[in-house]
Amino acid sequence: MRLGVLDVGSNTVHLLVVDAHRGAHPTPMHSEKTVLRLAEQINADGELTKDGIASLVKAIDSAKESAKRRGCEEVMAFATSAVREATNVGKVLSRVADETGVELRVLAGEDEARLTFLAARRWYGWSAGQLLVLDIGGGSLEIAMGIDEEPALAESLPLGAGRITRTRFSSDPPKRSEVVATAAWLDDQLGDLAKRVAKLGEPDRVVATSKTFRSLARLAGAAPSAAGPRVRRVLTDTALRQLIAFISRMSSGDLAELEGVSASRAHQLVAGALVAQATMRALSLELLEICPWALREGVILRRLDHSDGEDQTALLTGRGRH
Image 1 (cartoon, rainbow, N blue to C red):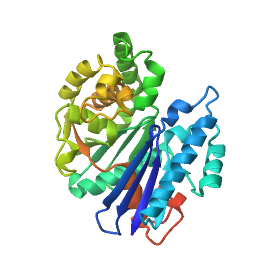
Image 2 (cartoon, rainbow, N blue to C red):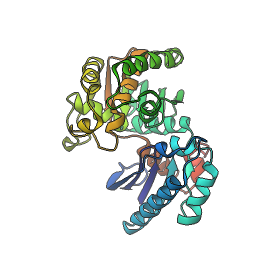
Image 3 (cartoon, rainbow, N blue to C red):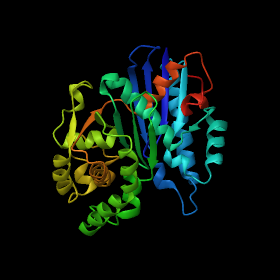
Image 4 (cartoon, helix red, strand yellow):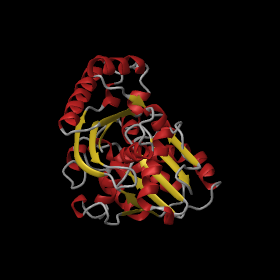
């Protein structure tokens, strides 16, 4: 079965095409991204602007045609925090459906955390034991923890790298005072989370997913993507602290020149690093492993688990049969 997953995030619209069937490893066949930075196209009233909607419709229509050319039997399209938080989300979804024929599902933050956790659990297997999974996106931070495929804890906090950049930094690079104040503010924001995680006991394995953590790990010396997904990559608290001291003095243009940093996300790398550091500090973590699978793979795996074609809303939210 050839499946397409269309992920409408805060920064990009990302189409991933895989060949997969139940019980098999999903094999990536094609990946393409369109940089939209939708979170930066929200106006003072909280609405996604007309230009933002038009750009989104165009990107989704293009991705739909690309998936069709590549023989996808099904395309699962979902949106995360930028669309989820837009006050005109209903209008956005209607416009997308009317002009592209694509039914864009909006994922709740907790469902993002649950599906990302599923991907990490399948990647590492049962031998990982109690698994703690962290994911920093453009708009939110997702945390999930548990011993099963369904996490005991799944939360989403409005602490994404793009959001922090927009709301707390006034210059590029950020002022030293802003970096210090943001680090202290993040510590305060994460205090309650630490208490909830602690109630579940010690994790046996701690992993992090998605672009922000991959970029930070690469800058800290982890193997490049060319080495393949099965190479063990880690990020330590010591390396992260040293890295922040270095990158917080660099402009986004200079950061984009570094290996492992994409131009579309370079402007929010410092904020992402501060969120990563604060989360590790709050949860008393010294080391994270970088998991190559994340939300998109979680969506694919959930779909394969329910390969008789249940409603996509039930699949993405977990309200289908188990």
